[in-house]
Length: 400
Image (cartoon, rainbow, N blue to C red):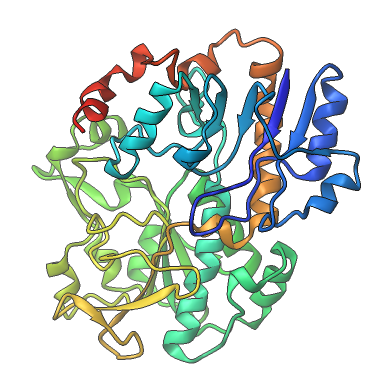
């Protein structure tokens, strides 16, 4: 088999790659019969020379390769017929902006394997950039807090060479005894927690958070049932919540009455209650003034996230009274960090982290044996047709 690492062609430019130079060498040593090449790139965080220095072959024309591995969507003009592709296609939720991409892959008889649906037998995702979304999102949250309060100034994450430099920047953080809310227990939530622990902020229980005062900054890590309750007041459980989300209402406001900062890394399922609404944010009791929305669901469960922000301009202000963008330095305006491509800010570290998961969980299924059909279950289309598990996309692609 011959595998190629693709040059990222989506705009805006993405500096990430699926395997670092050292990881390419690791893969070649692990699979002696494999041929692996890298498409040259002027924007990739790892330079072409970094690969050449380790004996990795650069190759522009990939028409003789069997498997092409990228990160983001491949531009339609660059797709090669009859190949196997790995990347985030952003089509499985019927995203309208990628309908033509899926149509093109079908017309070219491409076998498309989407990272988002590479899962184990328990339906747990095997690979992703969520950890670094959490790490960078948490960092940007404190960047926003420092700017809003003028209490400290951090270097933007994308200007840091790597995570090591980012962690050095954390030493500049100076916090009053504020209360911070964290949500999320998956990759994103764990990434947030990882950085919070490096900063050294004390964790307290939900009850302590609501009822005690502290002489130092503290955070609470909320789970789903901490901020959702049954409408009828009866007993609740996670399984019941996931099965009957419409029977629940948000109980988040009691935390918002005492917290200054909220870092959101939870997964929001359609039909679940919003954490807080625009009306909630208008309340004089609503105290949160800095929100880092790592999940970044626009006009969704976090009312102040009304648009994504960018790496270059990561913060905007949301005025709860007008419901429009405003100056986040104003006392009653919420500073919102809602960058939707956070891992791109630390492309070297996030690429290495992603590559480690690719080597551990995915390549053995591709290059050796796949008894649990990991690859098959993540295949969206092949031989010009949608696979059975993604047949629900038929009306999506044909309604053009």
